[in-house]
Structures are given as C-alpha cells and as structure tokens.
Length: 401
Image (cartoon, rainbow, N blue to C red; front, side, top):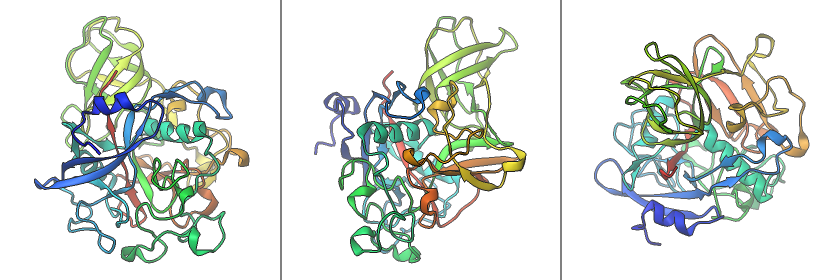
C-alpha cells in the first residue's frame, strides 16, 4: 500500500474496479488515523428494471468501506468522544470495531467532514452517491445477493447457523454487530474485503438530504459571482453556521434566483463536494447571464415524498423516481407501492409534520425484509435526533470534472 499516492494518481490506476484502500489522516487531535475507503469508478448504470435509471453517468468518488467509527474505537468500546459532540474529532472507517451511533444528522455531517484526506474534506454520503453505489451493485450482477444484518444478527433470508452471523457488538448486545463482520454476502463485491460492507442493515445511516415540509428541494447559495458562459458554479450555505436548510446538491435542473439579472434555469450534470456545506456544480452548458454572489440556487421542482393518507407508515417501494432529478437520488415514487420482489426493492417510511426532517437509509438489525437491498428510506426524523440504531458513512470527491 502506498498512501503517499495522490488522489488523481490512484484514480489513474483504477479503471473499472471498486478498489479498497487505506488512507492516512489526522484524527482531529494531531494523531494519525487510518480510514478504509472503496473507490466507486465512473460508469454508466445498467440492469435497472426502469429504463430511466440506465445509462446514467455515476460514480467517481471514494466511499467508506465500513460505517463510521470514532478514531479510538475498539471491539469493546465506541471510543472516548461523547457521541453527539464530535467537536473536531474526525470520523474513521475501520473494520471489527463498534460503530459510531447516537449521533445526530447535524453532528454526523460535522464528524464526517472533520476527516481531511490529501487536503480535501470528506462529507456525509449523499443520495447521488447512494444511487451510484447501488447502481454499481446492480451493474456488477450482485443485486439480490447483497445481504446484511436485518434480522437480529443475521439476514432474514439466511438460516440460523453460526456462519450467517456477524460478531456481537458488546456496546449494544441486542443484535447489533461490529463493523464489517459477517459473511461475504454482506459486501457489495460478494467477497469479504471486496467493495463496501454493511450496505444492508445493522444500523441505519444518515444521508445528506434535508426534507422541508414533506418535500426535498435542495438549495444553496452562489459562492461568488458568476459570469455569462461559465460552466461551473461554486456554492455554499451563505454563512448559515450548521447548514440550516442546506444540504449538498445533486445532479438535476436548478433555478438561480437573481433579482438584479433575472432568474435562470441551469442543468447540473455533476457535483463536486469541497467542504461541509460547499461544492462546485458542473453544468451541461454555460450560464446565459451574469449572477451575483449569494444568489439562491434551488432545485427547480421539489421531490415530494409524502402524502396525507400515506404519511406515517411503512409502504413498499414499487418504483424509484424517474424524473430528471429524482432518478439520481434512489428515492421512491410515491405513486407506485407495488412490491417488485424480483428487484428486491425495500420499504420506505413517509412522514410530513410540516417541519424539518432528514433522510436515513440502509435499515437496521430489526428490519427484516423491509431492508433487503440498501434502498430502504425513512423520512420521519428531525435533524437533532440521536438513536442507537443510526450511524453514518462518509465519502470523498476526487475533484475531477
């Protein structure tokens, strides 16, 4: 292993594989720490039953091979950091240790982005990155074979035999298991150590997606003025502190609201995340006009996840959204709740309390067939909620266009 390779240098030798590597970084206190991450190569999706999800340009980033843990986590201890007070502590990704749970969505974003690799901040995994990972599983032919701890230490589809269980987590002895322990079917590559572990079950993962009054409509602010013909736009949270009402953007059609120069719709084909609440949007064509610093940029059409009669209960994910933006986010189409057994689509929990909620995915040790493929969606949690069955996973953009 050569941890001195630049990110670009590593990318050059990774062509079509989800390679797994260790990265050296600061633990937030000046000490060395190591995180294991898997490279999701750039690829075009295929194999999905809905044509809108095939042929998408996805990937091109690193994702944690394991759910996040504290730097000093062990097989018997979560570590010395107060779970929901990360401060400057950097979340790590390591096997055989207790995962970092009981941390809110707000602080999971902080802990994830405290990890700096080769000068770039990591970030809480996004819906686009989730879609990329699951599409890689689909493309690789492992869809339907991917399993995890969704049934009290084992997968609901497996027998009660010792080889089908992970190693019990002594911090949560009721069926939670240590990171990356369990059979080979719990890995995206279908081989122990190949790809990403525990995409299904064990603990839910916070995802960088905020839901306002039952709708997802990502927004941010221009980080600097834009000149006509520019094909990239930098964005941030406009000094919003903890990123209130802001989350990382995804590919799709966005509207720049500009009272001086006029509004403009732009198509975002790629997002490069550069910080906790910042990134760069790569456009499919140059801007038509100038725009001033701090103008709002917001998804043109909100993705509505809940409806009155269906709110507050689990229901089957029959289809995924197929519109220009939704197809990049692996989110359910509320109009179709038919169970598609052959494609192993999971369930989702819709909720609308006319306030702020956030997204969690993957499922937990008690979810059973509700969580079979990593698609499970829960939209009912407030950003400040903490729970023993919710943790997080980080990702890292390479910075290429």
